[in-house]
Image 1 (cartoon, rainbow, N blue to C red):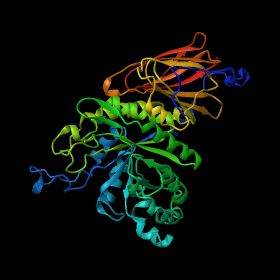
Image 2 (cartoon, rainbow, N blue to C red):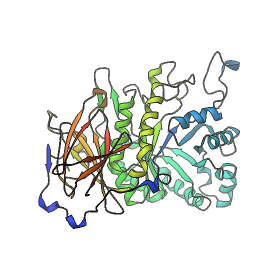
Image 3 (cartoon, rainbow, N blue to C red):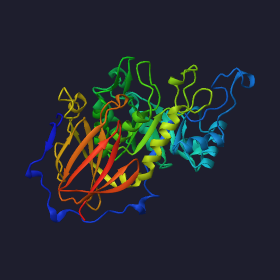
Image 4 (cartoon, helix red, strand yellow):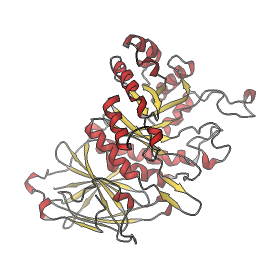
Length: 449
């Protein structure tokens, strides 16, 4: 595997058969209320006593578990939140959170330790989760975060019981690829993920990966991000699981960057080059004691309960994706292409080289060039229409723009979704010229009229 050349020019061996190309412009309006990329976030509005506030009652804030706070989360474009500080299936805070989520039109993942039931019966497990599992806002149970491989057999045992009770999510999130082997306790990261898929036998696979760095002198994007996305999507396809991905929605550690709109959209559009179906932010409310008054360390909502610039940035990109997600989800991921930009002085990209099997050709593309490093997710819908997610893969903090030229075969026009809005671009000799801003992605559907 390796990065593609500066210009990908494909031979006749990959030529498409004109007679097989679907004619006309596809219509996905019937799916608008059926298919949706879901946005969630860890740390739901917390109960009383989590944030210390000298001006609050008894020196502590009142509970943030209110309808108004859940409506605020909904207004940010979130579809669900994940409980942290409120936990237990019979907790009064959890039950209140579910009611508030329902009234705001959201869902809620209940944090509850089900590991105690690994050697139990479906009846005992059902009694334990009965107070919440049938609530209209309950999306499922958040069982554990970042388990080692040594816990997979117990998790699998609980999940088998759980499946006899409900089809709601048995939620857990796995270690990122940059975790140490002694954390995930397996021979390799690939083995760790694959053992999860085989042993836990779940409906979804979720990992966290926080790629943006800032050492005070320069910004960076972790070189392993694309390889991680590729691996998780490959396993999702192999085991018929939903691909969930965590997004860096705040400064994750001392050496990482506080994300802005450009960073967030780059993560999302890059994820959509790899078939991701559910996006989750780390975090919505700021972890208690994390920011200590420094807004650069806060998430959507700071420790004083105020919206930060991240709230507005995520709200904007979430709305963009929700505007056309039914189109994107009408397509199945086929693979991902990489293009090294002509202005890349090194002539290579380590992130591209770390991928196992990037595509080097596609039957609908004659050639593609880009001034900057570019990632292209390739898709096809059930009727045979091709789709392409094209993303400017440069460091968003550097505000580098990208000019991409794609020559399509058997295409008279392209339906282009930019910032969620469609437009028809007529082609001359199949050539499409795109100008992409920092972190920007567009979804393209070449059509034969």
